[in-house]
Image (cartoon, rainbow, N blue to C red; front, side):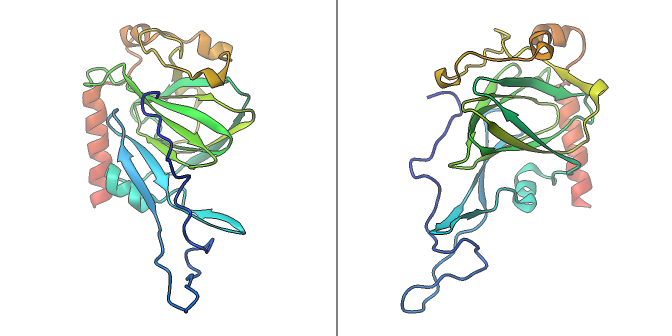
Length: 242
């Protein structure tokens, strides 16, 4: 099993007979059926990144789920996602996007899910001085378990498409600003991302293959530091508590 890849043995929690949890389902004798709601959130091995697993409600019409809950995320992270932009990418099988990050501070937090097909999504710790600097974790995002991943500002992000037309949607905390966007080569041996065989031959853009290695980015002063990241997160948490 790849690091961080989890696929539920039971395909989601599709127990309720109602698509919409606001439509109270009932047993045959009229008693209300207990309803599941919300999401499950766990922190990954990279601090300040989280896997989000929604509970799904299915019946003969299809499936209903809450794929984003700002309040549940705020409980875990300490502050809400300040949503400024939403993006969608569609990728051929084997496409690798990343490793991407934005100038810090303020950086760009990301909440990412796959609405069609499947990708293996990576979070990479690029914060100099972090206890997990240079390490990564991953989450399988697909249209079966419909998980999401939250990646805080100052972390690197990448994914590899495992299916054709893999469609990924991102909620982000700041608008795109090209001069402030940076990358690290996803094939950097120091980082050592592992792409599953089902992805096939990696397909990268020239921008990503020409990106510096992690060591080169650190030597040039391009990367955020652990201390600066902690101070920035504390400021966001303090603002949320007011």
